[in-house]
Image 1 (cartoon, rainbow, N blue to C red):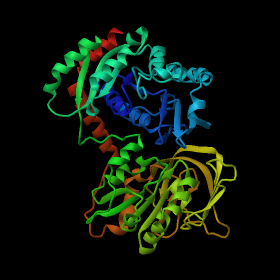
Image 2 (image 1 turned 90 degrees about the vertical axis):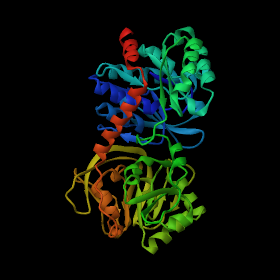
Image 3 (image 1 turned 90 degrees about the horizontal axis):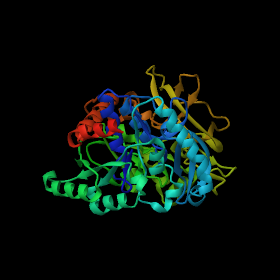
Image 4 (image 1 turned 180 degrees about the horizontal axis):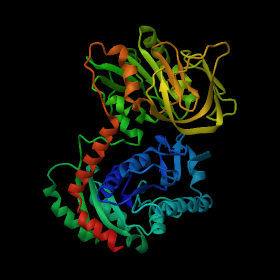
Length: 486
């Protein structure tokens, strides 16, 4: 298990690296995270929902993703509530206080332990990932994902610390010291992550940590650049572009308060023809060649906010000026005539007018759609791939002629196309398909060089680069010795 001294220490990326390293070394690894909290999710081949990070880790391991890899997923709805996804299916919203009550945890513990056991019967080893910090002893009795999970699995625990934020000695030593004797016996090594500078200067620090904790330091991993691995947390949006640029096709992703699945835009962001930026600045939206309305965990609340802060009008102005506007999932719903929520699935708004760009009406419903899909678009024969994760049903307004954007291979239709530059779809990952990206950019590429981007090959290359980077700075012989000894 990769456990952390805190949040955002790089456990997910390191788990991805070890999944690829173990695959390269002839093992059959699989990822596991008992409980995850993220708005970025993914649909498994069975049509179940898991955290995007575990889907990425499974890809690095070369195995299909499965709901057992992330049996409990929390998708924040507000600052105090989250939708609970159990074994890939939503079971309702819970407040943080309600969720962490001890009486609720006994049954959940059985579920996540059973998921691990099924996975461990198929794969070896299991690359387990903890959550947050293992030193949050106030949550020890209701913790499902850190040391209690490690005890159930009999896992070797490797403590990951982020040296970039400082205080690494206190965080590592304190995290070890706060464990019970049984828990401390499971911690077999320390990994220092995100080091900047000359590693030789930290060699005395390695020896000090080993003497303090009585546990070996397996490696000090430098902060890496030039390696792209999908990040699961929207905190990464803080580091992304925020304004338009001259000399590129400017693509503005509307920065929603409840934005979800921002990984929909990762490939487009890396297209050399494109400058993609996230913004809710009305001027930068109106400057864009293409405006993308992303998915939302709360469509009605985000739609209300777009109308309140002037972004809705900026999107309409951009469209009238000739920009392409495309909505994905919640963004598609917002582009319609109305979004209705008579059952109060999302909150207090019963109905709000949409942007009026597409002649469709959405009604929120309690049942969630989660499935992988194959489809063609715009009358082409190229088979594309994506996935659906959404609440709500969208229908044509009365008297409207059907104009679907996509034709699914199972015979269903998806989305709506209102001319060449006004598009809506429920399919996440639609922009993972190069043919669709070319279709989206085509009106703006007459003065640009053509560029073909093989995303599948690119991702495989990045996993290999990450594995090589981590392998170079981890004592792999010691790691395997620990694993085999236990």
